[in-house]
Image 1 (tube, rainbow, N blue to C red):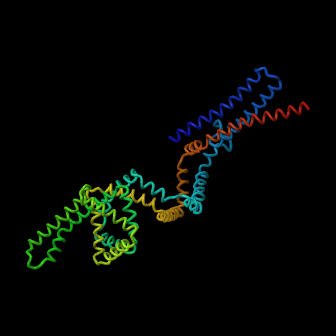
Image 2: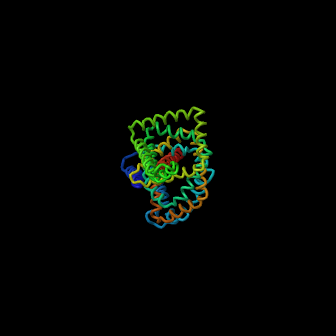
Length: 409
């Protein structure tokens, strides 16, 4: 489509340039039969002859760049087809040496708000939905290919270490408030409740064993089993109720969460209590093992064909984009890292990219190269022909008048 538009432009301007030459030729011929005075006839003929010379000379020069004029093998014509190798090598070296030079890249990247563009892109629902769909479809394949025990230990240890040293309160406030303001916290609660149900189902035997181990010796095993069943049913009903948006329990939970987030944002005591609670939990020997259960829940939820994984991921992506737009310091840090990443990736590849451009151009046949370059600059070159015709007419007129004035002196 772009080539078709460029080709139409080139043909239109070529016709204009050739038409102007034709007009000069018609006027030149007509001046001999128009009954003009000797002075006027000579003036017009001098102007038209110079216009034809200038226009034809420029036609020859412009045509010689791309092909042999009139198909004649005149030396130093058809320059581009003959110089394809030099052009290809020159383009590759020019891009690598100028556009990909580290100082040029660094200066250009400094002017770009990469994190802002990324945040705006992620905040668009069509984008987040598309990304979420691809992640949700590819995640089960990836999760099924890894060893559970190794990943569980890694996830548990990594989360425990990271959480212990991070100030999580500001992040929890920003992320939660962003979800709630957009009304997108519901799918997160649904996902958490369903993950809890899946975890509860896998832990049924462990719960029963724990109840039996802590029961008195004189309590019959059947009573322990019955108590375990009651606990399982109660927890399941509680989690099931949380998955329904209009239940009183769900609404109470959302109200309590909103109040706690406000408190966590402004109250130093609440923030201190949050950090104390976090450290106390992470200090427990079973903390890593408990955090490792996150892996089990994530994997079970991702592998569940009926799960709402894609909407949850989409909402999280949009929330991430909005949080990035709202937090300037985070955006600045991300900008610095993205710039360093791009520079680190492109700088060692300068010669490779330059070589790739050279190889692509060399792979074109001479006709293709000539056509592409002519479509790119041919329209502007036709203005040279037009200018040559007009300038030739002006110069011819001036020279004639100077010569006439000398003759009359």
